[in-house]
Length: 108
Length: 118
Image (tube, rainbow over all chains, first blue to last red; front, side):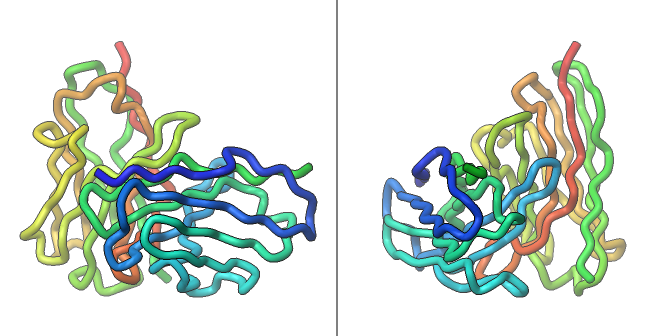
């Protein structure tokens, strides 16, 4: 099973600042099948990024995914008020599909 | 518009059974793999099962294998999760999710809460 770790656990930033979230895998993610999801309280997760770097339909271009192999990054270029949420990475290249523990981005 | 609506959650005693349903609309159901993902209260996400578009291939997380069964009715655009031998640790919101690009989870329902308690 591929174990995903995310850092930091919590990121406290102000609107307009840049957020950099990391996701590390215990072994190489097949075909860079790595996704990022955003989840707000009381809501279902929403797909942001798939294939490590492809933006899902309708996602703003301030969200950028990068990385390959075992190290991946989600960057939010300028935080908007609606971006404060929990972000999860997930690998779907090997069974069982696994999620990281999440990074909470909160308002400083 | 893609819509996924889960139902069937509720309170069940340890050792009991429950069957969840997911009603899909707004897309060609027979073309997509469907998944179930759960989230324990205040915790992270856990993928638990998928079923391919034809219903031929299913996969499970170790935590539920042998107790949970995923199935689908392509004529009625439904996905099911039969849950047996339920434990307190199965308490969670259960989400139905449609496969997206390359197998990511592109669309999610709002979830249904399953509580296992005596």
